[in-house]
Amino acid sequence: MKRIVILTGAGISRESGLDTFRDAGGIWSQVSLEDVCTPEGFARNPEMVDEFYNRRRQELTQVVSNDAHRALVELENAYASNDDDAFLLVTQNTDDLHERAGSRNVLHMHGELLRLRCMNCSATPEWKADCTRATACPECGQRSLRPDVVWFGEMPLHMDRILLALERCDMFVAIGTSATVYPAAGFVDQVSGHACTVELNLVPSGNAGDFDEGAYGPATTVVPRFVS
Ligand code: BV8
Image (cartoon, rainbow, N blue to C red; front, side, top):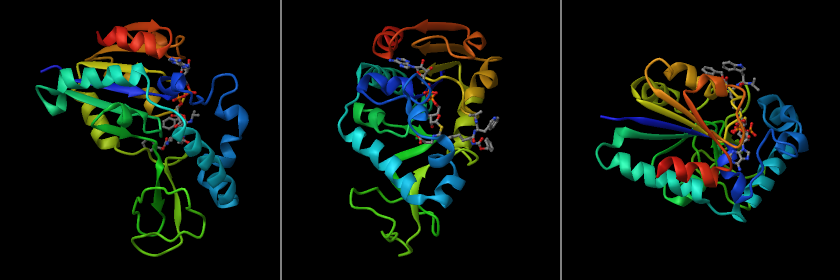
């Protein structure tokens, strides 16, 4: 049974119109990572963090999925027609463009823009446009809601399922990621002994040399070509 794990990063959503993080003019050139993407930054100034995520949520409502997202839906249908375990899509992205393209099982290892998380009871209610610091958790009533995203120093989500799938896969494909952030950047090393590894990116990433194969260009060109 062939099993494939796909890892996507911000590059797959770039042609939908969402900024990446580390390209020129990217998100980390607009705002300091320490201020908006760490628990310490949130403790210092939760309003600034809310503003950062609300701006990205607003941008997300203005964009749609692209041909690269749709090509991965085709790939999922081809693999999963035999066995649901045959295909796993892990994304570092917090947008919902994979789901809007039709992907069914998406593991958001860095969380989701359109969800909040209660620091009191861990409920993860949907984010609503009128949410503020004063919004109470719908489960426990506490005013203890934060963005449901994984900040630096926090444990990524779904790691058990991801590590098991990496152990069992025959193919690992990284798409649109600079391979800067761990543990995602280390996945290729975990599979290189037993799986064929492919990088699809605009340009070779920092660990392009760790992959068996690579195809470079815009995701809406290289991903459909890989899938066909
Ligand atoms: C953790 C929040 C402990 C959500 C983000 C070694 C091992 C373990 C941890 C570490 C380690 N070394 C350092 C660490 C700590 C740290 C880390 O990795 N630091 C780095 C900077 C050195 N990691 C952590 O803190 C993580 N947690 O380690 O917990 C642990 C771990 C395991 C087990 C137990 C305990 C948590 C990291 C999560 C941080 N959260 N964001 C949000 O706000 O969105 S980070 C941010 O970076 C986003 O989540 C993003 O998804 C992620 C990765 O970025 P990319 O997606 O790759 O985007 P980038 O802009 O960098 O690159 C874009 C790429 O696209 C480029 O290659 C470009 O060429 C390409 N591209 C551009 N246009 C196109 C394109 N490709 C195709 N087509 C195009 N058109």
